[in-house]
Length: 145
Image 1 (spheres, rainbow, N blue to C red):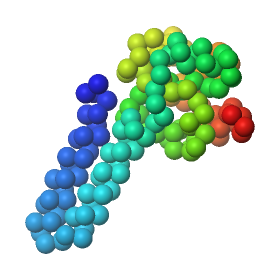
Image 2: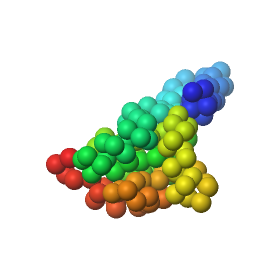
Image 3: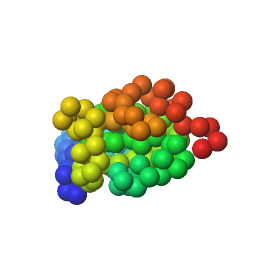
């Protein structure tokens, strides 16, 4: 669990350090802006930016029932963040599995990627797609979903 928050916390602490140094130099407005930028970036790479993760088995079960894609991801992954941001509100219509918290999800990703934990890996209709184009993933989610 600590590993998931290490990057965002480090980013927030660095932002606090840079903002403090800027404030000491007498540039309070700049310090506030710098701190806010670092905090926003920390939030974007944290697990909070993603829909709530569920286990791989439960995600696959639900996907089999309603046909929604399953997205395997991990915190701090730039490609996962890219996918999440480009999906917008449709990201909530998918099932998200954090492979650092779910061993079965990590095993499934390794099986689909020749032993590598390459994410995002998206499971659509039982078939895995590694780092797919976000526009294509959006098409896989029904508008009424």
